Image (cartoon, rainbow, N blue to C red; front, side, top):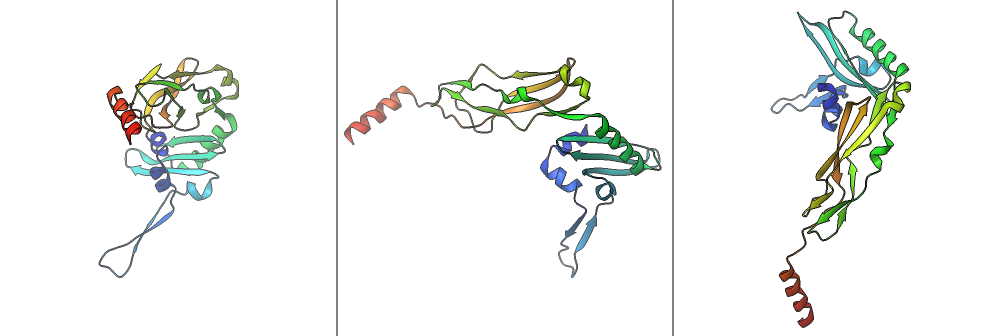
Length: 204
C-alpha cells in the first residue's frame, strides 16, 4: 500500500528509478555521488523501483514494481536469500495472468450545475486515467460509481476536487480517484453591483 501510494507521486517515482545522483558538497573540492543499489532497475524490463532492505529479523527484502504498457504491478518479497529472482518470478507471473483495463465509464462525466456563478455549469474530469489490473475473466465483474454533487455553489476553483469515482470488483472497492473542476467559475457579483456597473456603462 505504501509503495502504491508513493508511486502515484511524480517526485517519489523519479527518485526510486534514479540509478545515480551527484550531490554538491559545499566547502569541499569534490562532489558526492549516491548510487541506487536496487539491481531490479537494470535487470528487469519495465522496472520502476522501489526499495531494498535488510534487518536481522526480516532478512533480505525487496519491494519491486514494474510497468508494461498500462499494466503496473507491485511485489513484496521478505526474508529471501534470492530476493531478485523471487521478485522477477512474481512480476513475471503477474504480467502473464493480469491485464490492464481502462474503465471507460469513468470518462462519461456530465457537467455539474453551479449556482450563484458567472457560468451555470462546470466541466469535471478524473485526475488521471482510471486503469485497474484484473484477470481476463474478471473484466465483466467490474463496476464504476461516480459520486459527485448535483450542484455546486460558486466560486469553484480550477483543479478543485468536487467528487470521487470508485471502481468495484464483485462489490469490493479496488480504487478511488478524485474528480476535479476543469475551469474556474467565479461567484456572480451581487445584483446591486451589476446594476451600478450597468449605469457606469451608460454614462461613461
